[in-house]
Each structure stands twice: as structure tokens, then as C-alpha cells.
Length: 125
Image 1: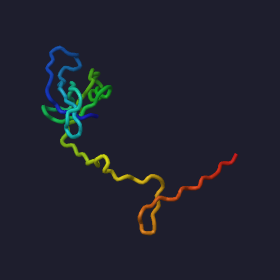
Image 2: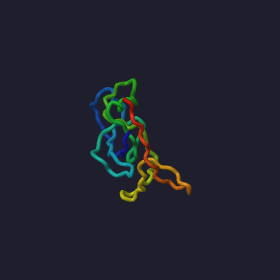
Image 3: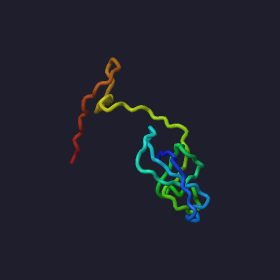
Image 4: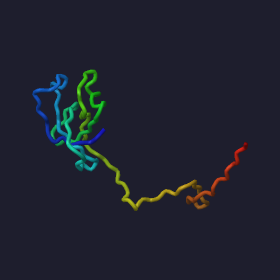
């Protein structure tokens, strides 16, 4: 599923019969910080979203699933309205604490230290 902001609606008098009574909205895809990402698109609304709301939508074959058993020709469908997005902060590149590579063992003082390499068994023929 993808995030987007509703930026407008579509009014269409001539359309596929299975779209009759369904609201078409214009979406601006956004990232989790609500910054615009990519081109706008049109989606069928399955949840009653309104202008300027942040929504999540699906694309492709899954876009028709909310309308099952009806066969709705949808490339994108709004499937939820977002109240809030919580994003845990990521460390800045270069400020990451590196995890030691290899096996680790605990020393007498409780600190982690690199374990000596294991001896490999020879395979028999």
C-alpha cells in the first residue's frame, strides 16, 4: 500500500457501468514525511475520503478487491484514511553504530568481545 494526499475529484458522465456511483479522486503520492513523490493519479474511493486527506491506496490487480464480487476496472483504489503517521528517527549516515562482525562472546567484565575463530572439521572421503 502507498501513501497519498487527495488533491481533487473527477466528474465523469460517460464511464463504465461498474463505476456508476463510485467517487473518483485525484491523488498526489507522498512519502512518510508528507513530501510529494511522483506524478498525480486517479483512484476509485472505497472509504469516503475527502479533499486534503492523507490516504493509503493500492494499485494493480489488488485495486479491484474492495469491490468484490463486482468487476470494477480500477488501476488504483483508496483503501484507508490515515489519521497519523509515526516514523522512528533513523541515524544519520556515518553516525551509525557499527555492529561487530563475526561471533561474539561475553568477557569476564560483562563486555562483548570477538570470539576466536572456530576450528573446522575435515571432511572424510
